[in-house]
Length: 373
Image (tube, rainbow, N blue to C red; front, side):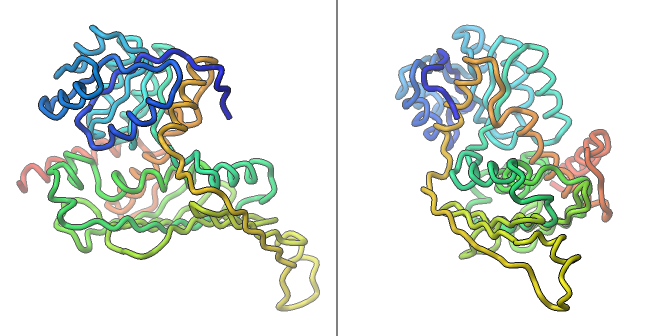
């Protein structure tokens, strides 16, 4: 995937250094060649400064001052996502590449602006979607790209992310329109939606439903959507923070084979002959093609931030794009926005999503939230 000899020198500045996700970044950075943390910044001065002291780098309460004084060539943004777009644009203006935590932004119009700023500055924008580097996901992607599945005819994605009331009480911005711009779709779902878009592509039409079923929050704790793809294939998504004890289901069914994907294994079922061919050629009323199942056991590495950094470091060295570049990272956000918009509009929405319409919708929700509080 990457050439370890192409280890571009990284001068890293971390913005949002007080965030709980930062130790994962620090661990990943420690395993890289030719990488130095030159500064940290956070508006939460006490926690941010303590982490900078532990790391042995200068600390700033203003990210712009950190960018100007330390001149990193990679800005890592770990702030809550409402701040991703303006900080990333500042970093590009300062000449840095950017790695931003998921989701890329709150609304797709902000992601567009981030991508445009990266292109204008001739810098790289990457999103921390480390699950793309799971062995099962990478093998599934290879199989799909090789054409072994044939034309995709159905996808299924069900993934609970159980959360308690204490989790939502831990920070006032969680699951609020002003703080996150959504609930489970904006916080827990981005990795799930990213894998679906990465493997099956973007749908062309979305029918979404969002509900707040169990938690005392402003936004959704449960979401589902029916999908339609350009070739007529159908799909279904359900994601929530209310169920426990259930494993992720990610299924992709093609004309010649199907895939069941978990963290630990990849199961492929091959049809002989293809579904289309058998349905037309068989004289039997209730027969089905021969199905041969193979389960490919794979190590559960869960991707990891180290893989994201190595891929990004290689891209910087070679002038290529990382696997999780801004355009790729925007897909899951656009799908999340579409599900939310469809639910409130009570109708299907087509993709690409109407940016202006969604911005107006989000502003309306935020205003209503402000009045209610």
